[in-house]
Every structure is written in C-alpha cells, then in structure tokens.
Image (cartoon, rainbow over all chains, first blue to last red):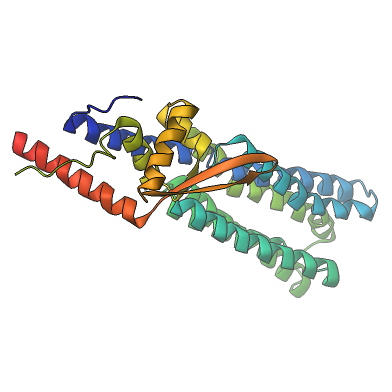
Length: 205
Length: 96
C-alpha cells in the first residue's frame, strides 16, 4: 500500500472495502463468548447432575464456582488471541453482559446464603441478555433462542408450584426433579448460548 | 470548480487507516496492519503523520506483558474525512 496517485473512484472503492472488511472482521468470532460460557455451564451442570444422581459428596456443589473462573480465563485467552479493535456495538454488548454477570454473582450469593434455587432467575436474566444481543446484532436465530429460553425458564417456578402447593406430583417425580432441575437447566443453556454461538460463528466465518 | 483533495488523506495507506478507524471506536496497531496489509514500518510512519495532523490519537499501553499501540479517530479527523469524501463525490459527479 504505497500508492498515492489514486483515482477518485479507487479512493471511494478503498474506503468502502476497508469499512466493510473491518466490520466483517469484528463480527468474526462474535459467537465465541457464547460458546465459552455455554459449554462451561453445561459441563458443570452435567457434573452436578451426576453428583446428585449417584449421591456423591455435596462438596461437588462448589464446582459451580468453576463457571466464572473458566469463563473469564477463556475470555482472556480469546482477547489475547485476537488483534484488538472495538466498535460501539461491542462496547454496548460487553456492558450488558457485565451487568448480567454482576446480577448472576448476586444470585450465587443468595443461593449460597439461603440455599434457594436460582435456575429460574439465571435463565430469565441470561435469556434477556441473549435476546438483547440478538436484537443488537440483528440476528434472528439468537433472538429466537433467547425468547425460547425465557419462556422455558417458567418450567422452574411451575414445577416448584406443583410440588409444593398441589397434590398432583408423585414421589418419583420429586425424586427425578432433584437432579432433573439441573439437567433441564443444562438443556436450556444449550439452546440459549451454545446454539446461538455456533450460528453466529458460522454466519461470520 | 473542483474542491481540492486533502493531500494527507489522498494516499492509499493513510486513507485505508482512516477508513478502518472510522468504522471502529479504536483499533490496535496489529489490527490496522492486518486490515491494511501494510508493513509495520510504513504503517508506523503513516500513523505518525495522521497523529501530527490531529486526525487520530495514539495511545501506548500494554496488553499483558506485550506493548500495545491503540489508535482512534478524532473529531477533526472525522471532519477532514467527510470533506475528503464530499470532494471525491464532486469530482465523480462532474466527471460523469
């Protein structure tokens, strides 16, 4: 790129191609953060399902703490790998997910102190994040996955209502739900983060 | 009467750098080098010229232990770029 004697048409063509290439480059790997957090959560969820099902030590509950650790390490490695450039959209999406991450940390504190289930709130808030990301990136599949996840989050309060306020649940269902809740949580995460992540990466390859 | 094309922007590499920076809020040296396909030495010289003209800001920092140079376009740079594109359009419009 040493030329200075550009024609007017060549200059306009160069400007257009540089702007388009830069935008395409920034969109590349836009699904990878979804994959890092999604796969990490699913693996930890499966470990917990197995721990509950086979009656392993309750200490396996601490494995949930691996999600933020593995997630942040993965994000740092991703940031290190890619040359750095940011646009307004990146900044908005990062801020949204930072706020969601802080909310999630509060949920974890509440779960640790009060021993309550945070599956519903986690899926609801993360689903909202996925919807917002899909709308900002104008990606229909991501938005649909987020909406579906938010709707699916209603499974948790519904089951809670059925098992605690009605007589229609059986003992075998209550037994199943001990590990089934985490299994359903993992399946929703698959639709909420992993599938949109792969779709976004394929779209901008 | 044709508007005069800004000689600082009417250079392939400087125009490419300005176009990239116009589409992002900030970009590091490696990103600019990869997008423009320029050599590090040449890019460094052109960035310096754009910075001296007040069209871009250059910040030196670190990414981990590696030094990192981050560039961003200034308001003055945006105005100069807009004027340059308007001048280009007037040339093309009158040439048709």
